[in-house]
Length: 83
Image (cartoon, rainbow, N blue to C red; front, side, top):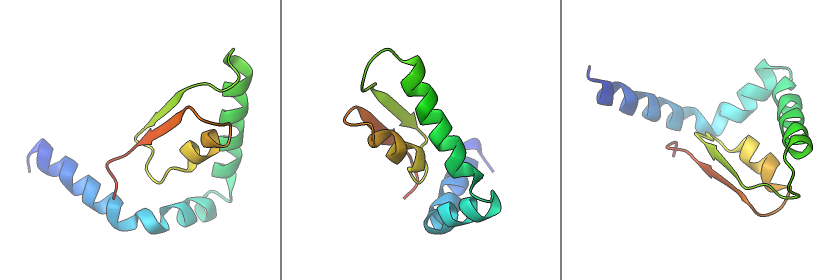
């Protein structure tokens, strides 16, 4: 299989599970994933010297981290190939 074919297959697989991905991530990590997102947002706010930083979450998958940053206000965008 070509590299393009492999990449397409990965996108198809992720798109097929995207609706259940967040639930599985929460369950399998015992909700640790929520904690690391809170820590990530807190550390960005602490280390970046602007009140509302502009953030691009590339490969944001289902958007959990993007949503956490969006709560800071305008200036956040996410981009993913998942459907």
